[in-house]
Length: 388
Image 1 (spheres, one colour):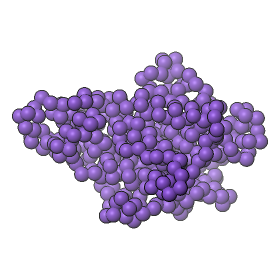
Image 2 (cartoon, one colour):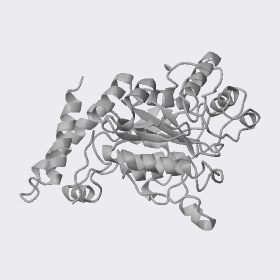
Image 3 (cartoon, helix red, strand yellow):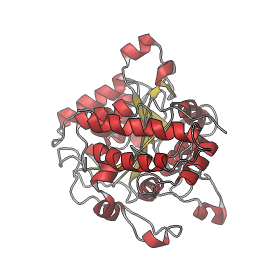
Image 4 (tube, one colour):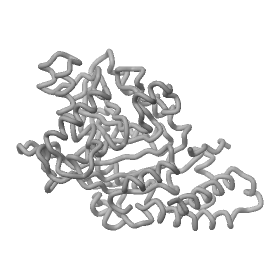
């Protein structure tokens, strides 16, 4: 039997509620799908939208100028003081060449550009661009965009151009897009594996042939799915498949949100037998207290982005016949209940379930890893419920 791995509001979660979540779940995986973006000049992004992840407990590795990540517990005190953050946004872009993804320090910068919700001005844009330059988000990143290619690599002008072209996709994503997100607590032991996977994903392009994005077989959703697989949350998905095989390994950002919601927050609560099997195989289960879904509306239209009438593509899901034509909006309308989206209500629901399972434990299961897990989870729900 594998040892038990340790675990270190309705629409928009407030900063206070978010801090409470992190107090109880110091390691978690969060996936968000975003709608297309539109500039005020009429330019539009692709209708499939974009997907990215935020992993709390993983940090940008500032020992390397090239994008790499590291468990936050391994960051030196000096670097932690200079670049304080407790999680990292990981986002892929089709215009990257020598990397697949960049690391954005902190959830607030990744989601909200460290800004309150308001119409964004050109001054706000310049401020956040300087912020990501100071944080070396795009240092040593080759970008295929026309303007960056015309400038000296890694020069201040180059970095500003890359930051401008990726705003609303790699960072400050909610400035440009409505977000549909699923959060899943994870064991602290999963961090080295996902760091290794992500670093190797980038390193293969550091010196060799450039990364070639594919809307069908190698995109932002593929990277997210395989990142959470490295954390033990779900099955992996094959990339760069040729011929007909690629159509059996497609991944759209919106469909991926539905997948994460189905396998965690919306999945049927496990019985003793299923929970024991999950613990034996993997040490934890994504179907647990703290697995929730959220919606983050795009910021109001401002001087750069037009956030009215944003569209996104969701494909039919043959593997989910009862939800064949589901969309994020339909999911949120039907399933965005307090129990699935508010942490305290979620904990109250799980407290009753964990107690029910504890009451059903057989004599043989007393003192087992299963009982230990249930007691720890029950105490966690109680702590969440009584927290201010």
